[in-house]
Amino acid sequence: MSGPVLEIIDLEAGYNRKPVLQGVSLTVMPGEIVAIIGPNGAGKSTVLKSVIGMLAARKGDILYHGARINGNKPSDNVPLGIAYSPQGNMVFDDLTVTENLAIGGYTLTDKGLATSRMAEVFALFPELAARQKYDAGDLSGGEKQMLALGRALMLRPKLLLLDEPSLGLAPAALKKSFTTIRGIRDSYQTAMLIVEQNVDAVFAIADRVYVMALGKVIAEDVPANLPRERLKGLFLGAMK
Image (cartoon, rainbow, N blue to C red; front, side, top):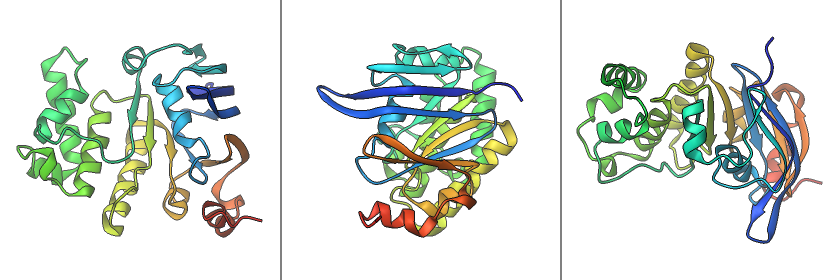
């Protein structure tokens, strides 16, 4: 097996003077779905923001295919093959579905390639194909999540960072979204790092899981070896 797509080593990061991450280390291998779970305020989203370059690392290393990307901006990392889908179904409400996807493929100079990538997204999400001329603001919550994910896929990333893909989704939309995420990995061997609160949903697709609390990794294993019900208690502040 080749080396890690992503390797984080003793990462420290935070906001202004507030420290958040305290020596976080993790790896994501090629074609692997890795989940980060934990209570609110654990630092899960901060890990993703540090990797994509929205937040500078104070200490430690972030390695992408063995190359140090500390100090890179998102505009440096996206062309390398790293895509980030933030939480909250963040789309451009006043632009159409097609225009949102075009923004996701903004670095594709080959118009034919951009068109084929968009066709791939519409094949993954027929609901979007049927609404491609609609403004994104008129979509349902589940459809906005599809659009946010589809936009991130326009560049066919080697590493996909997903922040709370289940947020605000009805059960049927959630199931479809996570089935699609697994299908994307299976089809393109895309490595994924997913921050998620829904333990049952992410355990169904993850190869490995990191558990975080108070800015630190407190456990790492395959889903079958982790105490699912006890972890749900952790999220409610009830872990003993």
